[in-house]
Length: 68
Length: 222
Ligand code: SF4
Ligand code: SF4
Image (cartoon, rainbow over all chains, first blue to last red; front, side, top):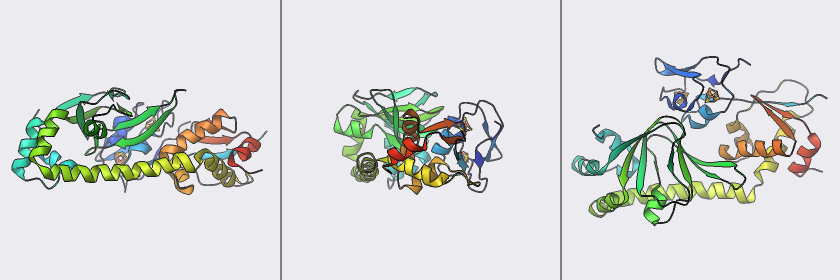
């Protein structure tokens, strides 16, 4: 837990689209770039990544093999 | 609220129009607001209004008989939806839903017809918008019909995880899509399919391969 989507401040133009779709209140605009606050409610829905026109926010997945 | 003519000018539909033309068009446009989750047009219902998104994001999707949702397009500010149904006069083939708070500009079908007759430039613009749309859809159709996307996602996961030793960079759904040459919209659905057959388990930000055998079968590797 605790990890949040990764924001590339250089690419973010502060359009706020990600903020508008995030239901958990994790994202907010601060001086024209978006910032992510750690919230438990972020379920990694990846909607912020989906709607960003600039590929400035990303929700990467670790791909692992289960050890049994 | 007054319709912002600057914004109208930035919409592909209305590019190349003179100031007075934009003003005339603006008279037919009205504003509509919607909240997260609000359905703005329904599949199989005829559309009566053409929408332009001015703030926020709208998703265009279809729900299958078993309740799975497939997103076709994400409509960002400046883009339109409902146009195909409006212009063809046929029922909508897809639904549209506000992904958050949105502000829309709207024009009624009958008003659009008037505007089109009086300003042929708009008709030319619409042809361009729709041609681009057709191109995007053809590539999605290709993905659906020829490419067995779920199998390819399975293969990609197997190859990427390798023997499970060592740290590998994490992947976004966009990166997974690029690796197998498909649209991002296809990847989420494929991952869910793989989870349903028990090949993987989706955790918050992890894809855990639980059954390599099933994954290999789905990938067509025997
Ligand atoms: S992944 Fe979903 S919940 Fe998390 S920050 Fe992005 S939009 Fe919000
Ligand atoms: S959608 Fe992308 S560009 Fe817009 S505020 Fe969010 S991260 Fe920045």
